Length: 72
Image 1 (cartoon, one colour):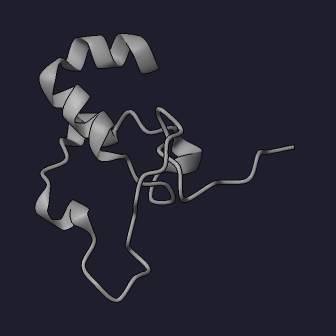
Image 2 (tube, helix red, strand yellow):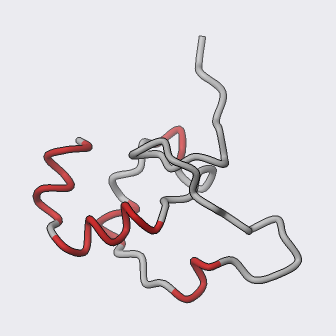
């Protein structure tokens, strides 16, 4: 049985992602460049369903190899 997708949590660290995609106001992620290398790491079942949090985006940008080691 597949675990349900929690759209409010980051697919990597499971913290609250603060996604505002369903809100009237633009989401914070509209102002952030999210590397395609990072989005490619999102598990298939969560792609286009769960947003990456800003902390994980920043961690990946600081050290992609360390991030991949931690979350792959």
